[in-house]
Length: 176
Image 1 (tube, rainbow, N blue to C red):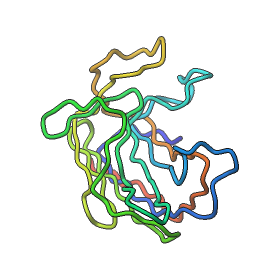
Image 2 (image 1 turned 135 degrees about the vertical axis):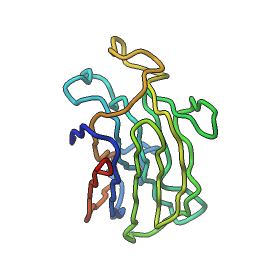
Image 3 (image 1 turned 90 degrees about the vertical axis):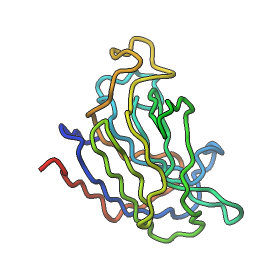
Image 4 (image 1 turned 45 degrees about the vertical axis):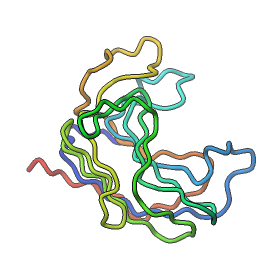
């Protein structure tokens, strides 16, 4: 995990999904990875806590059939606002196309603190939201109360049980 004091940033990632899922990997983890940000510190996580409280830009790959968007939004222990409405569901699909193969995918995440956040896949803005905040299913004893605005935190590349390759991970400070 990488710490970042300022969250007026642009993050660019180029990734691709390769090979087969690890034997015994859960079905939900098939071609599933992402970038977590505004995340709690690794040292503050509980031993049995599966994910940090964070905002996740989720990377999903297609199975070769049907549609499965990437650049989605998942919110472990958090909520966001979309079109003026507080969103409390855990994952929200983007409007991206499906990528079935092993092609390189260019993803950008533009974060203006707790104001506006954009997920951009192959140059297209696929989801926009604002006001990330603590909320929902929190670990017992979590020190921040529901509704606390998220303006900073840690950044992490998330891994499940499917091989991903990253050839570019960039972080640009937009506050200057």
